[in-house]
Amino acid sequence: MSIKSVCVYCGSRAGVLPAYAEAARAFGTALADNGMRLVYGAGDVGLMGEVARAAQKAGGETFGVIPGHLERREVGKSDLTTYVVTETMHERKKVMLWNADAVVVLPGGAGSLDELFEALTWRQLGLHSKPIVILNTEGYWDKLRDLLEQVVSQGFAGRETADYLIWADTPVAAIAALRDARS
Image (cartoon, rainbow, N blue to C red; front, side, top):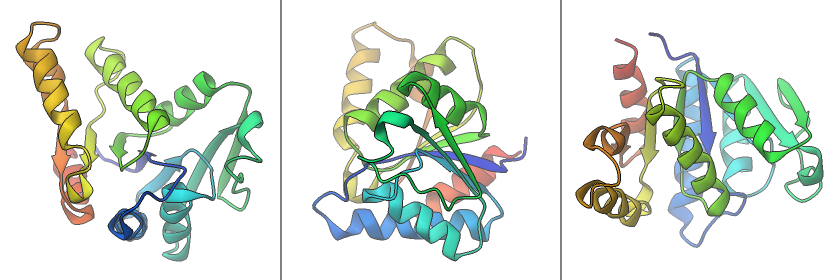
């Protein structure tokens, strides 16, 4: 399998640590440098804007998907290589995931968690077999890892569900995980 297109879930806010935006920019640049297309929520705010602008600046291809009702709120970034407007959030998630070979999750809020858990659930149900990488900048997702271990240890999911997630602490490690997923 070759990873040519990566769906990125991340915040429409920048978060409190400058490291979040730095990692988003580094990851966007790394995607472009490795010839991987960015697929994301088409916003020009928060970490979404950071990763997209960095990918564009590095000459990368960008594919954004945004529901019409969020174009103003998330400042729809219409200067992308491909800009798709959907009717619903569910349609957005489906278009994003089906147009990518892998998923990478950067820090984010409820929307990022919703996207991650839908992708994870679809993987658990056998609807796709795409790698899901968690970019755990500054330990942001540590509590999520603990929660998933709790879900498994209490018998609400098999070990494979938690094992579907690949953990990376840096953008370089996330790109390496994507490269490893190719073989």
